[in-house]
Image (cartoon, rainbow over all chains, first blue to last red; front, side, top):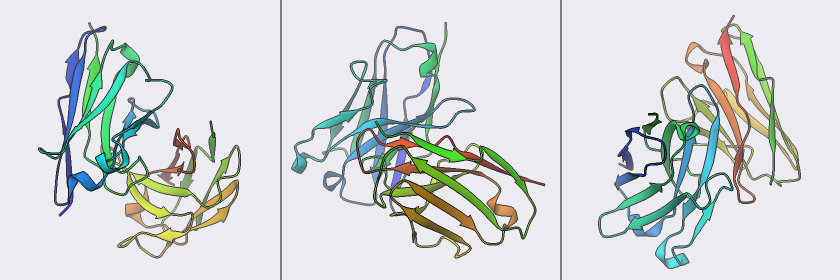
Length: 118
Length: 107
């Protein structure tokens, strides 16, 4: 069974950093890209970007709203994808979902809540 | 960037009603469009890919149509479990983009 589980969310002060993890199982992690989508409270879905598989160069694509502050990485040996959030602002408060694929895949995690507040 | 506009933003309907949600892309996206259903406090669930292909396990009362810039999600006979928010998403070009959502509420 395909599973994606996000972790690492919580309360963080403005300006600080956080690393989210997407731990996966049930498939060959290295064959896939992984993406991140967020949803602010009461708002819609926002695509943040994705990291390609190593066989496709492991390169990344970012939404303009987070480029330069957020980054993606992956550890194929652990079957985990990461989202690194830097210089956090109050409007980064959201549930962060990982998705298998470039953001248009059918497998999603349950999400992890990040709250940015002093 | 491609903008996705959904309408209406919300609607009230009764069980058994036929419901139609539209999604318009700011430029042509061929058929590279997905529809998602999201219930409160849950992750989005993909219902339809490639504008009209129903994913495995999705009830046949859901259907999608369209190509180019105009797309439609139809629920032929609304069921109690269908009350949720629906999003369209284009995946022809990065950045991928979602519509603003349509909340389907009980009348």
